[in-house]
Image (cartoon, rainbow, N blue to C red; front, side, top):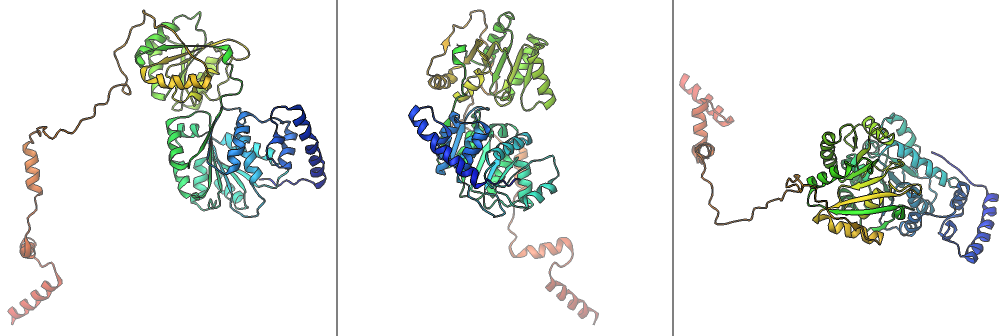
Length: 482
């Protein structure tokens, strides 16, 4: 947590600087700068100290929607300034308060991101009196309870530790006005959905929801549909994605195993395909492809996805980066932080449903003014996704004729196999039931014994079952003795 103030002399000085800068900006007609946004002088001072004068596209486009109080969904790649995109308008609206409970909640998937986001917020709030802390697992929860008990304005947390603090009532979430979920696609891939849903249940219903992600998935869309109210969506392709340096080609392929045959045919040319990054849609597809390539290209292939251990993933990336392996199979989320030079080819084994994911993928090649090649393998069901990608890029992907040498496979994956839905047929003859059914039915049949029920019980157990019967029996025995 931190408490920082700004002197009146510094404020008057920067107010003067701001008045001088604005006319100069309008005279020169330069691109949008931070002074054109509705930022406070304190925030402008902090940005000036950091050396930032021009907002990134996501910062520019997200500012007004977040300021308006609407629910916002932002899709932008890592490194485009997403943290400042949601924190600048939040800090602009956050008024000074001495209340104990936090008003802003930022959820991130890992402890590393908690530390990073807290650090970025502290930089922005240099001249603002705001209380910030980060909470995450793997550390003493009692220490964190003591910190949050002192009072907070903004809390940055991983879902698991936040829920622990909320359930123990060490952290009250009843005053949360703004909920930010950052890197939500990573959270879904790491299995945080149950914790997120539990947290949503204990948050106030009247709040602003803000979500940022680098990729879009079905699970992310499902979360948006459940908790967001008419969200405004902002989609930004990675700034400077070198489309001019990347040659894009597409193959129309009938099914997954035909794609595998085509890949084996292409990658057999080691002179051309020197360093290949293959993107797949899910972990099952990654494992299937890796098992096949282990036989076809022994000791040349590595795989990374969230079911692999951290050490395994790091080792796979290192082996690919150093050239020990020339093929790396990865899912979208696990390839998020990959920054590897000299990748000659990016191959989209599946056509991503969300066009932003495609931009994220192909940006891994064609770096540092070098040329790269991107291939996308498209089935008939994926043609619509390819059309959306081409609309986003405002260009067509050149289609290549399918090689005659490649075998067309008839084998289908479980996901590709047609699902037969049985239609109700009233004339369908019922199957005959065996004798066991009738035995069970007879055994379980009930008989209404009516008023005789108590007498039958008495005969069976040889003793009375009610207090009245016991009294009657005692009197009857005394009469017999007399």
